[in-house]
Every structure is written in structure tokens, then in C-alpha cells.
Amino acid sequence: MKLPLIMLGALIVLSACSSSSTGRKQVMLFSESELDKMGAASFEDMKKQTPISTDKATVDFVQCVAKAVTQNVSKSVHKGDWEVVVFDSPQVNAFALPGGKIGVYTGILNVTENQDQLGAIIGHEVGHVIEHHSNERLSANKLQNMGMTAATVAVGMTEVENKGLWMAGLGVGLQYGIIMPYGRAHESEADIVGQDLMARSGFEPSASIKLWQNMAKLSKNSPAEFMSTHPSNETRIKQLTEHLPMSAKLYQKTNNPQCQKPSVISSPRS
Ligand SMILES: [Zn+2]
Image (tube, rainbow, N blue to C red):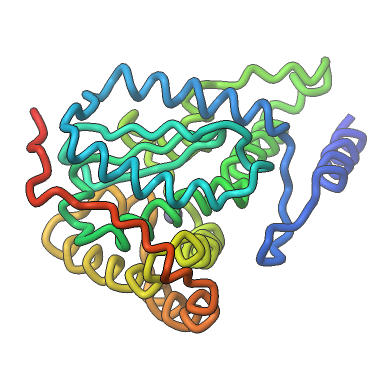
């Protein structure tokens, strides 16, 4: 019984294998539409659980930066408009989900000094979506489950997807108590893809380096949520600096979006 299952697993892996834009081999077992549905459902959950900011100046600022970035993302990643929500919470965090969803917490706006640094955050988050990192994580979970529940698989491949697992795979499990950081390969790829994307969107690409330096300083005092889902390592700033000459060539200086960061970010109700 064991051998055919291994062969089945190998077959699935081989048939689902492709490459990311930086040339990394990827295993993706889920369809785009499945991921889009999971992303949308998770986003709806989060909107129910976390207060949404109604401060116009803050929302306008985030929308302005997000729009500048997402209009440079291929329609093959997401066809329609991206939904951007500002959560009124002191959490220093932000995320993007398959299905064209972006969430930014007011807490992170106190760390980002200007539109360019917010462009770096949104570019990085959207970079995870562009490179299908959620699909890879969910696929890894699924393959692991297949190994552990071989009997169930043998009967008919009936996989009951657990919502907690999706949320974790999508990287938004933190507030549900499941901390699932992105791995180093995903972080590194999102950094490069994000820096190029922000530059093409008219944001000064060197702001990505300043942003991570600020994050590092902040987390020395109190660990930021953003740092726990996006673990830093000593190579991150080095890699962003090394990639800068490449993204600088893509920088559309004349398209600088002119998004105004409000002088006071509305204080969260917590
Ligand atoms: Zn990340």
C-alpha cells in the first residue's frame, strides 16, 4: 500500500512543479481560483474581527500608495481592483492575500516615515502574492498531511481543508494564535520582487533599506508583529543593498505618486 502512495505523491509533485521569477523551483497543488477564494474568505473574517479605520487622511494615504503599486502588478496575478483596508490597530503589521486583498494596520504607519517606505512594505507584501508563496505553503501542508493521513488519502483523496491551516498558509494566522513566519527563501524573493515593483511604481527603492533598518531598531525595544511573520536576518539589508543598482534602473522618478502621509495617524481604539 505504501509504495503506490509514494508514487502518487511524487506524481503530484512533478506535475505541479514550476519556477518562480527568481528561478526557484515551486510545488503548487492548488488552483489560482482556490487560493483567491481562501484569500477572500480570510479577509472577510479579518474585517469582522478587527476595527476598520475611518480616518479619511489615513485611509487616503494608504489607498494612494497601494493603488500606485498594484497598478503595476500583472492582471494575471489579479484581474480586478485590489481591495485595500486600513485596520485600526496598534499592531505593527501589514499583509497581502491572493484574490487582490491588502491589509495595513495603523500601527505600521508610525514606523513608515513616508510614502516610499509604505511603498516598500506594500511592494514586499504583494511580492509574496505575485510569487504564489501561499500556494507553496499550503501545498507543503497538504503533502505533510498526506503523509500523516495516508489511509484517508488511499480511500479517495478526500481532503478536508482546515481553516486554521489555510490562514496559517496564507500567513495571516498570527492573530489566531498560529504564528507561521515566512521562510527565508520567500522573504528573500519578496524583498527583490518588492523592491523592483516599488521602483516601477515611482517609489524611491532605497527606502526599502531604511524601512528595514527602522524595523530592526523598533524590534530591539519591543518585538513587532511584522517581524514575527517576516523574520529578518542579517542578510536582508545586505541583499536589498546589493539589489539596489538593479531596481534603481527601474525607478520611475517622474511617476512619484505624491501620496500625503498625515502628520497624525489616528490613534487606535484599543
Ligand atoms: Zn515577507
